[in-house]
Image (cartoon, rainbow, N blue to C red; front, side, top):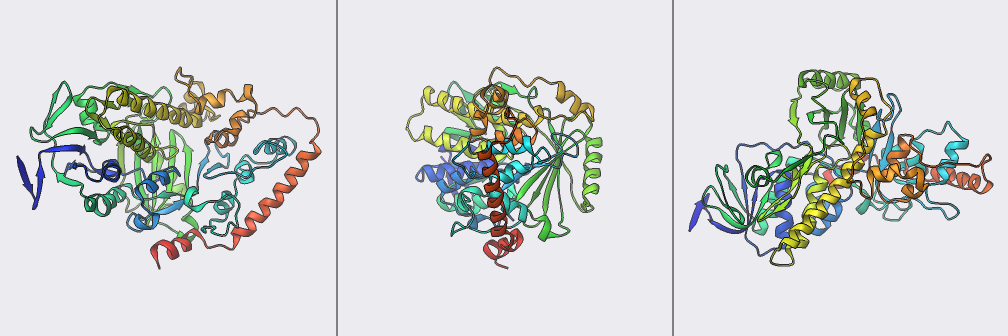
Length: 513
């Protein structure tokens, strides 16, 4: 049986049906059509539901996914009003007025005489006025770009270890990114699209039988956001609440115009802790995306909006013509993400919170794991279990990493921060990064600072050094290393100081103006 819609013919039986559009739905469609170019893939998207669209900041891992799809940044950036991102800055998380610190992307510069990062802790002990922000600056050449607000492709390797194709992420409009994928990637490759509300879901022992009593498939992908229509509402998969680790469950989101675009269009996301949560600041090409993440256990939505506007006033932001959207966040993850013939991706699967720009991270990470499973052919319960364990492990690790930003805080200026200071962040699911790594710092000395995760940036930036320097006098060898690194820092800054600003770089490479 066939149905005709807008001049196109759709069979009612499909190989894969994706329910829900937005960035998660169209990222899913793009991944599946790339991996399985001859498969019958249908996206059913509600014409009435607006996408949340607050995930305007990504991490460097998105490049692995873009490379898989063979998408270049020049392809989508102008459409999505994107800018480049090199780091995340955290301000007032450790203490109010702490002046902030960075977590830059990319590799660090090694040294041969002592561990790659350890020399800095000698520097901090014997020169105690050294700010914690100096840690990232001392080991990451990328910080020379950030500190000078410049960017270049480094094709001649002037700046050591900086790889433009690997070390940049993106600030963009997530809803526009989904639209670009739909229009320029998915539909030209054969993905079918229907605008229709799902009014009924029929189930059987295999999972979902039909949608609206007419659409059936071998596999259903749930991309319906926090609603989790298929996995949560219809298959009744239990949801694991993570509020014991993460305090926030609400957000006010908006955008404000630039005052001085040359200075304000910076290559990093800024996160500022305030009275009952934190505020993000994301400079895209056409505006600054901003929002207040908070907990309704400590403040009402109305008062939170007033706090947010007070913060914007303090920053001199003009929000006269801005629209403020309130988002209710479901923080946690379903016990299983792949159940019978349903797999959930994006918010329908789980959500941590926007800190560390992880919203789209779980989408493309889970998708790459999913296609590995599907490529085996017939999906067995072992495959589902493999996917579920792998995704939950990743999700738990990242949850603990995000929770670390709260656990290490010394703020006690409001009930919100005082409660965080007395909260236990211990969990029996401690894995290999995040809180476990930080908690074991004292026992394992430098071990956590050799990690490839960002734990060492967060821990050091929040005065959890995890390293005991017992020497009463600065060793001569370390003194020499510090001098060498100081000269390297000067050289990195000299290389960057005359390069194009981020704004000018974007004008010449992406926007052609």
